[in-house]
Amino acid sequence: MNGETFSDTRIMNVGDSAVQPRIPTIEILGIPFSTLTFDETIELLAGWMKEDQPRQVVTANPEYVMIAKENPQLAAILREADLVTPDGIGAVMAGRLFGAPLEGRVTGADMLPRLLDICDREKYRVYALGSKPEANQLALQRFRREYPHVHFAGRDGYFIESDVPDILDEIKQHRPHLLLVGLGMGKQDAFIAKYKKELGVPVSIAIGGSLDVFAGTVKRAPLIWQKMHIEWLYRLLKQPSRWRRQLVLPKFAILVLSAYIRGRFQKN
Image (cartoon, rainbow, N blue to C red):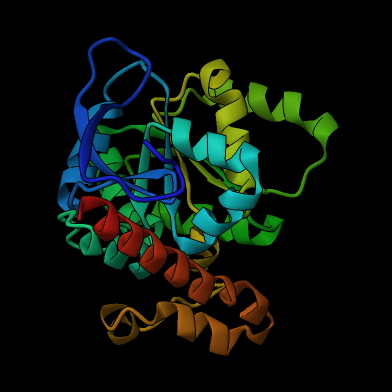
C-alpha cells in the first residue's frame, strides 16, 4: 500500500492484544482514519474504559496530516495509535471522495461531554493534564459540578522534563479510567505514546484546547458555524495569528485531488 495515496476502506486490527474489535478505516495520506460514526466511537471507547488494555486516541484534522508528512515521529504516532478520528471536515470530505462511509466529524470537543457522562454513570476516575494553571483548575471545577460522581484530578500543561516523573506518579496514584491530555498538537500525542504502557490508562485521548473551552477561557464556535463546517473560520477570525496554520488546508486539498486522480488512472 502506498502511504502517499489513499487506499480503499480497509479493516485493520486496533490495539496490541490478539483479540480486539476490528475497526474500519480509510488511509488518508498515510494516516488510518476510523470510519466509525460518532455514536459508534463513543460505544467503542465506553467498552475500552472497562478494560485493562491501555489505548491511545487521536482526533486528527488535515493540519495533523500535513504536519505528519514532514514529521516522521508524529506520522509514526498516528499510524500506531489505537484510534484516529476525523476531527476536521477536510478529512471527512477526503474520505467520502474515496468512497468511505464517513458520516461526519468525530471531534474531541464533542466526545468529551459524552465520555464524561459515561464516567459519571460508572463512577470512574478521570485525570486532566493540560492548559494554563488557572484554566486547568477552572475546567476541573466545572467538571466536578457537572459530573459529581466522577473522581477528578489534574494539573496544568506548563512543565519541564524534570517534572515528568512526578506527573507520571500522580497519574498512576489516581488510576484513571480516562486520561485527557491537552498539551498542543503533536506534544500531547507524543506524551501519550511515550507513557501509555507505563501509565496503563484504559483510554488516553488528546483533546487539544477542549480544557480551555470547558474552563470558559476560550469560546467554541456557535453551533451554526459548526453545522456549516466552518468552525476553522471562526477560530481564524477570533485568532488572526492562526492564518499561517490555515495555509496547509489548500495544500491538503491539492494532495487529496492528486491522489484521487492517480487512483483513477491506475484503475483505468
